[in-house]
Structures are given as structure tokens and as C-alpha cells.
Length: 233
Length: 386
Image (tube, chains in turn orange, yellow):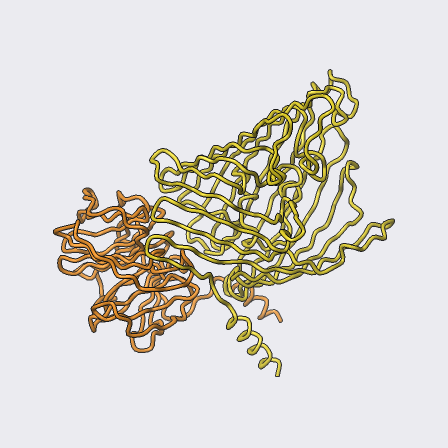
């Protein structure tokens, strides 16, 4: 009986195995209101905002340039070459922008009838070159689409929290969770969690890796970017 | 065998959960959601009372909610509670019509909301009930003494990434009774304001730290309301507008102010709120002044109180534990005060979407203005959001 009572009291503080606490080596202010996701483009960062804007930020976040505005509700962003793809949560659109010609844009609607504010939160491309779209929660759907955004399949991920961003790095899928305050390294074959990286960041909404292996996590409400050490993740 | 039953029960409960449904055409989006809840209420009466009509099952919520958005700038919401709409209820805590408003966010200086909805002045009142472990709000903040909803115009502005929020609004001032159409004969309006500040991040209107914030998060707010309604001789306020205590409206001047705060950290949350109304009846011989000389009362009587509530969310066990103390005074010119304590336990099958809630309420002491005929109350029931 005493053991059960102790377990009950300590239960909030118990953690599963394969959990590592990580600490940022520095944090910087992000001069964007309500930043909701980030990706690396060369030596710059592309940041999308809940306000509907897409910004290009210098690598020290001291300079920003508005690339595009008037999107409805961007929550996820992915960059490759000259293209930037933005996942919009409520409108269920994926919009492609050109870095060199921001006026050129086209959108694809990916239907999802779940909660209006629980739609697409993250977008990335996997090792096969297919798109992965993630809904936020209730449930977390991972939708795989081909290069032309035709659906290949969808899976409900059994995760102990929401998904607020996603990144594919060196053949591994990493999912960021705002509510669980962690990054999950996923097994792409089984969709199980391989490892959990926890941190003390509020309202983590953006995740990306730079070319050197540095992990970056962006806080929406704090308007901060946290840089973690370069290492193998 | 017991284990099998538990597994089957869990499978039934979790498998039946469905979230909100939304429709979109890329520009317009509409979300359909709702809430169902039923509880059983049991009261322990005082030594002389025999009326047990409150010992019963009660359908508290049968809500349908439509939330829409057009592009970046237009929002609207319609929320009805069919359990109360059918009987034409304007119960301030549980009305038939809960929200009916449109909002425009396209101006740089402020957002505009027009329609029927909650008055932005008390944090406790603004917290959606479905995010509470309780079945009943604190007595002096549930709409019996000051209205919680009304028809009017609200202007709001957010600063510093939503950490600072300023809200100013003007309403009919009759509360939920405004839905009947006409104002009272004075045609006066009520002016409401609120300012709140959160740190280090903006905080939603919640009383439980279900996110288990990794850093301490605080929110402090203050609000005020003012209206002056001097009824001509022989005129009355519309039936029901003054509420069950007759205190929601003053034939004269009414100024209310309050402050609130919440602290959240790793599942622990502490909420506190106080308010006071200063009522100045135009008739210095008003019965509310209890026949006390003007020299002593200055022609005013006060209503107000405070509530403190502590919650702990044990995330791995999906359990919310809560305790609440409230102290309020319906009229400071009368001796005595009201004290109540409550406890609540909520078990979440699927977050706040499916939750069993148990609340106990005990009356420590009461004023003679409106003595209750019971001492303890227990409520247990199930809340389901879809």
C-alpha cells in the first residue's frame, strides 16, 4: 500500500527510458510576431508567423525581410532549392512560394475535416522524397503524399502529446511537441519513439537542423530561438 | 476478469472519442463542435428543511457550437445550449444562447466584436466551463450578482505577442435578459473594461495547468464596470434582470472593480480573484440601505468577495485535484458573510473531452439575506465534448 502511495505521489516526476535532457547553448530574440515554424535556407532562416507572414531572417536574427504576407494561418514551413512550402492549419492548404519571386505562388488543398485549430502543424519531406504532413492533435495524423501532393497513405501516431513541428534530418524523423516540451526521434519503419529529448522551453513551435548538425527550436510565445550544440542526434 | 472489464471499458471510452469537425473551402472555415454533460446532484439539508427536489439527475449541457473564420480578419461564433434553450432559460451560468457574435480583426488599432457573449471583466467568468474540474462556478462569480453575458460592442487590442491585452466594451447592461429585446426605461448602457498581463508567455483562459508548464507562468488582470440607471418614480427593471438576489442592477449608480491572478507551474495552478461593487441607489431611503442613516452609509452599500482555488494536474494519472475557498458579502450593511469550501476531482479519459467530475461543496456560514436550506452538496457526472 505504501509503495502504491509513493508511486502515486512521484508519478508526475517519473520518466520513461531513452529520455535525454538537452540544454540550449544560446538563445536569441526572433523579431517576428507569433512565429510558428522555421526552416534553414543556406545561411538564412525562413520563419512563418501566425499573422500570415513569411520572413527571411539573417543567421544572427538581426535583419529580417518580408517575403510574403496575406497567408491565412501558416503553421509549418519547409525549404528546398528556390522553393518554400507553407502548411496552413485552418485552410488545409499547402502553398508553394519562390524565394527569388515571392509573388509567384500556388496552393494545393489537402482535405482534413478534424478540428479547425487542430489541423496541419508541420510539413517535411522524407528520405523517399515524399511529403509528410502532420496534424496537431486529437489525433496526430501523419499523411504521406507524393511529390505532386497525391496521398499515399495516412497513419495515426500514438504520441504522448501534440506535434508542433517536424524535420527530417539524416534519414531520421524528428517531431517537436509544444505540450510535451520535447523532441521525439522517430523510428520511420514502426512510427515508434526511439528517443525523447526534453527541454525547458515554453510554447515550442518551430524545429530545424542546420548543415552542421545544430538543432534549433523556436518558441512562439517567447519569440525566441534556442540553439543546441552540434552533435549527432 | 476485472482486468478484462477495465480493458473493455477503456476501449469503449477511448474508441468512441471524436474531435471537432470542420469544413473549409480554403478561405472560409467552419468548425462544428459541442458538449454533453449530465450529473447527479445530492444535497444534505439543514435540520429544519424537507424539500429534496434538488436530489436529481440534471442534463447540464447539450451544446452545439459553430465557430467560423473567413480569411485572416473575420471570425464569428454561434453557441447554443439546447438543454436550456428549450425551456427559455436565461440562467446566467447556463443560458440557452451562449454566444452569437462577429469579430473583425482587420484594423491595426483594435479588433471589433459585436453581438452577444461574455463580458470581459473577470478571468474566472471567461474560463470556459468545460475546462474546469467543477460542476459549478464560485457563487459570487457565476452571474447571480453581476451579469456574465450581454449584447454589445467590444474593442480589444493585444500587445507584446498577446502578453498584454486591453479590452473596452459597452453593453445594454441588463445581462442575459437583454436577449428579450428592450432596454429598461432609462435606456442607459454599461461600460466595461479589462486589462491583463501574462509573463513569460500569454496564457489562455484556463484554471488548470494541463500543459505542465516547464517554467512558471503568471497572469494578472484587473477589470471594472460602470452603469447609472435612475428609474423614474414607479418604474421597475425588466422582470428577472436584477437576478435571484436582486443585486445585478441598482436603481442609481453601480461601479464594480476587481482583480485576478493565476500562477501555473508543472501541473500546479493557483487562481485568485476578488471584486467589489459600490452601489449608490438614487433613493436614499432604498431598502438596500437597511434603514441605516445617511450619515453612516453615505448612501452606498457594497457587494463583493474573493475566491482562491488551487489545482494540481497529475498528468500520468489523468487526474485533476482541486480545492476552492470563497468568501462573499451580498450587502456590507448586513451583519455576517458567506463562506463556502469546495473540492473537486476530475478523471480524464481523453483530456477535457471526456471527463468524470466529482464536486463537493460545503457552506461554512451564510448571511441572513438569503439563507440556504442545505449545508452540503455533491455532484458527480460525465462531460463529453465532440
